[in-house]
Image (cartoon, helix red, strand yellow):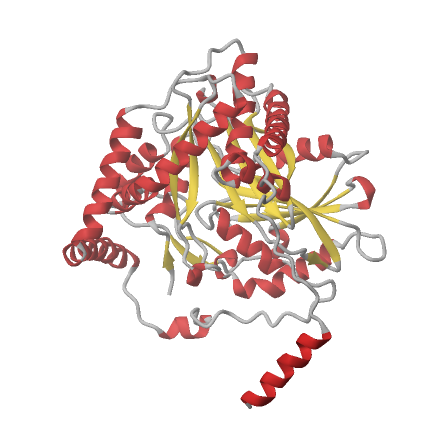
Length: 503
């Protein structure tokens, strides 16, 4: 038995096919302390450890049945008889001194190369030479295989919650039959299966609409609002949306999760609103440094929303929708900017905007593979949004590999055609790292954005501090306290006598 890609999964293959400047893999860099003996793991040890866990991630040893999407059928995942872990795990070293500059320069090159579609669609590099004896695991996985939240689940599966973990059982999940049983289950040829799937998908949607008219009305209303608001009113054209190449720049900004939570308590909104506000400051400074007037209506960010259920935690593939948030880059006042963002995101959440985006994706899924590429182009066009800002909550506890503690994760977001900048946000164990990805040719000034985001967080810390100082403190109570006189010995004796008589 082979699994077909979902229409949303196939979208990310189609986006690459339509433009040489699109790179549709997600990824990150996990930075570790030295091993307990002060060294780094060997390549052989890393390969052995990964192989022992891959039985839990079936698609990681499978390849696509077709290198291209958009034919008569959806590509399917098939076992790769030539799978070799050494084709997917490599070794590299940073030049001295191995600081952030060297790491980000190396990462920009690593994230620039497309994955080989003739093999399973992931790669990992054991990277040594980081400052203070640290080392890293850099990874990239095609977006058709997993989304951002799913990649965190996979990362947690590949790591350990203790310094000395128990040996991995590495058994396939109960809902995934072994390859032996797969060969005994009859199934239709791929073409018939895909045609049947498309028909069943359309029929199931019609039946569901008939049985759940209130939900259907809500989805229809949300879709209509999305089309009017975000399709008919196009995102503004800016220098963030020029033709792009396939090579990348990469930079990081660090923040503290407890500090971001303190800011949101003082200023309102959510942690994600705080991040969006800091990014707005950086984007405003980037446009101004280019001599570009920030659009009065703001620039539009696509903010992915996780729609996974608890039962889908370790499921591969994509289960995401999106909100489209106008970032007020033309507003000079930082407090007004953050209040505008809080108001905007609250309104979008209340309106069911994510449901409208999910409905649009579901409707696109009804198109046959041959026509689906046109829908994919519309879903990721510059008319709909200017950049992606994705915030993925990571593990809240420290994780380990080979007894070495994972210190931080540098996330990377893919860039669709003519989207020159993207921001990925990852929290882990109380820390937050923003990974800034950019087209190398059109965004040589990525450092301006980096400094602007850092300044944005500094502004928010100051505003939070001022808000806390100016918040009214509870006034001391003016009501006189009741006084209790000490009880005399005679009173105690009388009370005891009364109690004795009552009993």
